[in-house]
Length: 331
Ligand code: ATP
Ligand code: MG
Image 1 (cartoon, helix red, strand yellow):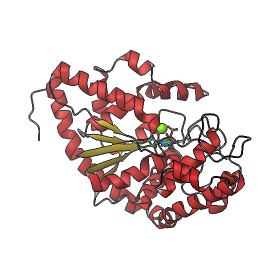
Image 2 (tube, helix red, strand yellow):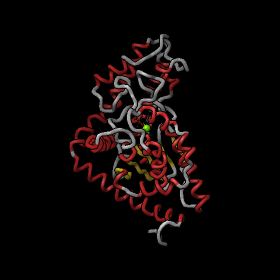
Image 3 (cartoon, rainbow, N blue to C red):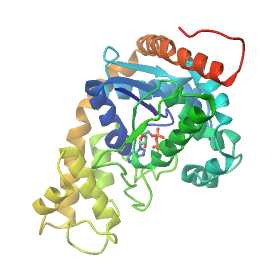
């Protein structure tokens, strides 16, 4: 069982990333051969500052290591260190339908949010993501709910490749957590918590000070009712129930039972305290890891070597199947 997932270095990582993706990455190390990548080449598809990008890669690497990624038990690297991802992207464009890319929700949302350029990179984002996963012939892709459509697309790409050029790529399955797959912004509970599109008060960062976490939860937008129950017209409260359930590793119905009759104020305080406690060990470990940039570089470079030893073989096979370049044998 091979597992692959990528995470963007843009800005600081938030509670949605942590619950929806990062905890799954840590668990994946027990389940199979886990490969995780900081996708800096995805981050350049929207407006960004070059020095900040490099810093963000270190921030994200230290956060993931603090959360429990162990370079001895997984392959952990920076996407741009492995050029096979970009080569495979281009090769896969030949079996990617323009019409499918045009239907991607993420492209519609992110392109609408751009103030200046809507880059072609933003449009191609799902092809690069397909290449990320298919380069490793991964079986299992742990992601949050927002990435479901992109995994569907990469499955289509792999299937079209295999039927056009012969069985070469593995068609991967999506793995979405049962609880916490879509954590919403605390101020705008109809939008997902997001690295690039969120509201400052509605986004809880993994590295936020406890005071800031408490403040954000206390000011979370809720409805005018009083019952701590999930309902379609109670997006704010439903989100808080989901967060507490995920943090406790419990079901949302258990949270509803426990807070039956409690007011929103007490409930919000309980969620805030639970999240503070949940994130505290990560914050503590982060500082020392982040301070050692040469150490982070060494980990990422060793990870890139391991990653290349797998992805290079796939690219050789893909080129051969497609009739690109001279005849070569893999390995
Ligand atoms: P952006 O909004 O700019 O795309 P992001 O917050 O989605 O950034 P990514 O690095 O793109 O961050 O996503 C990393 C992982 O976190 C993905 O698997 C994604 O599905 C998951 N994820 C992102 N937001 C949430 C969320 N609000 N709830 C649960 N999982 C999430
Ligand atoms: Mg995203």
